[in-house]
Length: 304
Ligand code: MLT
Image (cartoon, rainbow, N blue to C red; front, side):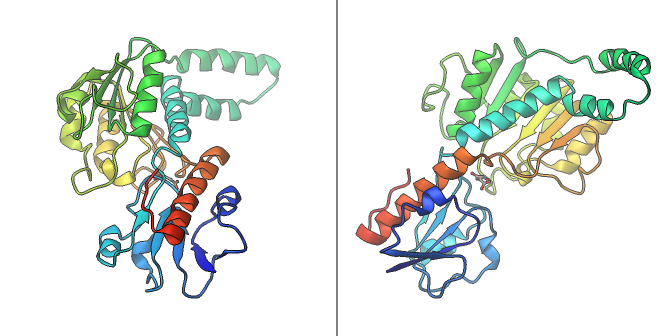
């Protein structure tokens, strides 16, 4: 019998891949053979010596002490691409919300007051106040051409945007399934200078911490929008707050609220919802459960 500890709610569809006769799955369990985790921070946990594998039901592995685990010979499996569509859809929602001032408009409507005649007058004011802009012809820079970056770039091209891509590890020609209309940016600086919207889709590494910083924000086109659905630390939020105050940046759309960003009307933040759809949770859980099973039962290491 293999023992699996779950550190977060892992979709039941994934857990079904671990048959009851051979697997015991629980959030509290002695001497687990493997751990399934979503975003719980494992850096602060003591990982029992019995653990032979870790399954991360998502893409990023920055919540897992991967180097320490590899020294112990413990593989860390993740689910690259399994939640890419969910993240892409939320980025698009953010992009449209920023372009059409939707959160501000919703807030405005909540505060409408008076009889229907008075409301009509206020609606006319709102109409003038929240004039937005359309996406065709606007520029989008996508940093990181993995599963999410590619899906976003392809959809943005379909929506008529001019899209630039940059990835330190590959050219746009080599990126898997990327639309050939996506143009190559020569560097992060080049992409930032060319794009009104910039969306980051890179993992959190020392090289990507603070990738969007005060210097880069100065290179941006006026009325720019930064979208960050990757990891909070990739964008320097204090520099963002300054650029918003200076009026150089139109909006910061992100999945990571912080105290520095709190209450800022030009910050649109969701509580790490990028991968929070039923479909993505199922896909990620199934992918890692199958990888864990294959490893525990036959010693195979695969990551897809
Ligand atoms: C990811 O890295 O794929 C996401 O952060 C997933 C999640 O929300 O667990």
